[in-house]
Image (cartoon, rainbow, N blue to C red; front, side):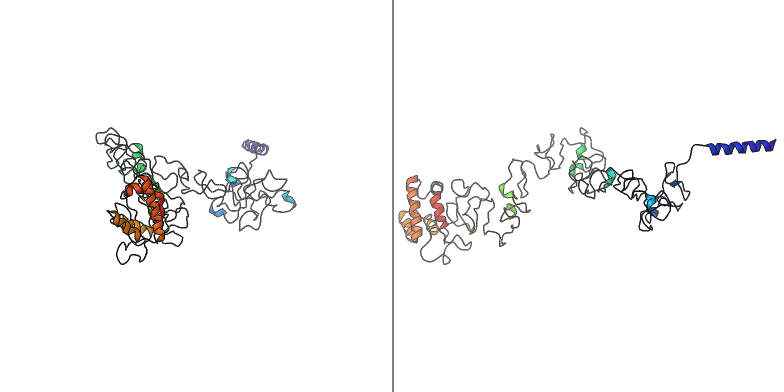
Length: 437
């Protein structure tokens, strides 16, 4: 009886096994549970080695069917069908070259084209792009990226990103705002509202320990009764009311005016106030270079000190003023020695092209030029003195002086009021100033 029962159970088990319709869909040559099929634990890059199904061990040869053919330098060759160990080339392949065995590749019998025939998990979509982007922000390495990423491990950091209050250089410009720092390590940043970033026990606005001043750039100006005053730009410590102007191209004193000499029109990194001798040529900036005109011109109006200037400048901080009544100081002094033409000069200058010469033996011999005659006349107090100075001039100087005298006669200016003469007869005076050789 026991034997009959045992046989009955054995037959039943065999029938159940033989009649099951649940076939396992997994080709697994090395028995590690990984292989090719939907019932496998996963894909096996090397189905001849039970110790290897992914990772560095796969680099030598990716061979799903274990026939020695597949993808990799150690394979015997490519495999047109990496799910069949009896087929790697020839008629068995059909019209489909499929290196990674995902059914996609090149040929009419493929399921479709494959943008990456070395990766069975990728045949179309974003995985095909030429962009290595580890943090998924669109920036990384490759032609299809939006651009290079300064930190491909942080999606909050890429070029052009908006700065937020997180203590990071979000826009990749190499700058983290002072307001994003947490100097006292209390977990509150200035941009979060930390009223005192030097005291970890003090951070919430309204606490007795807090100063009533929201000052994000730390220049003392901001919002609140304890600030020095309101700030025109609380993200830049170099800009606040009353700050002295420096050569940086910014409105340092918050008066809505950037001095013209702080311009860098040719974008060569040198400003006029830095000494850029030619702000229209990015290859020319250093005074003394052959390309530079010999003209020290701080306000960029073409007037200043030097033979290549259009003329002397009585106010080299204002491009709209170089001579006449706009001048704060009445002294035309081309060589910058303090001597020249005007009531505010130290005296007359017989040679306004030489900073070391204004009187004495160094002065030009012979007939004086017009500029020297005017310098002589400005020291006169009577007509005989004026006549003597006029007599020293050469023919060109006398002709130019005649033009000046005619203008003075019709202008109503006193002949010793050089400020009035400079304003009314500036054209004649300018012509005289050019006669300085």
